[in-house]
Image (spheres, rainbow, N blue to C red):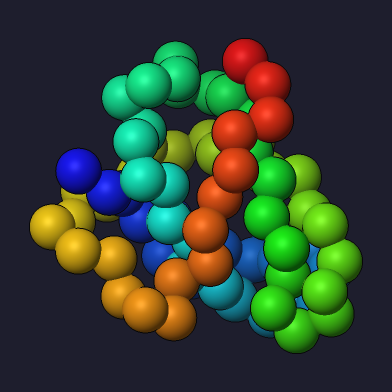
Length: 70
């Protein structure tokens, strides 16, 4: 079940993005993810401090997260 990190501040552009993780249970809490800022095209690292919101289907505009490290 996908999960969302809504309205996440992006250090690359200073804007807010909704980020999505397809399998948040696969990696422990506090893992490091990466995503590409849709505004600048820069790679960004993210280590979420809060638990994500579970959803049935992520919005099409959500930016996908890629697992980087535990």
